[in-house]
Image (tube, rainbow, N blue to C red):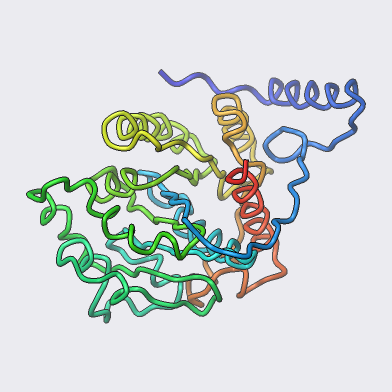
Length: 306
């Protein structure tokens, strides 16, 4: 059962209570878009060595929520902070690869060859134009893997076995999952340390969170006891709409501090970067979108360090 959304008056009341609470505690702290006081996340400290990687599945079974955009730009922002990052394109559409300027339709070797043919990961690994950011590309060939892996022993652990030899080279591995809860996504969850859920700030995305959270819990119980929900990043947010503000309020109410303070606002810049084939951090480095993903990277690093 879906809990009714708070009214505009209730939302205003909640924001007022939060602000009054700040004043009473002696902290006149402005509220962020999540309705919570803005927190100061420190600049990440430089690292002198790399690995072992924290593996994060970027997952949402609903398409069109900014999942691939978030994977690219979070990865690029982490690399900007001196972290070594591997992006894994686990979607047969190959949008992650295309978003980094890779002509994925012409590739001879992709993630599909790693999973099905057991090719060496170094044969498939690609350097991107971003220093410290590498890619395991994908294309439509990967769509056959769901069927081809069905008869494999321990088929849910196939991706984990593929990635294991290179984990010591990286600080983060971000897996861009396809918008479904099939075998490929289960492989990502089975080898991940945690999950980040990019969520468009609208009602149907809110409903899908419960289903995805159930899947995460099942994989945790049956396949991967280390798996946890790292956080939820709200994307395509438009503060001008009551609907977006109400959904935001409900997400924060249910998931609390799992919701990142950083919110990704709706902007025309992101479609432009898809055409350009590069992250917004290099395409429009001074834009609000670029700064948002740098802020998200700071939050991710800060959380992982705790």
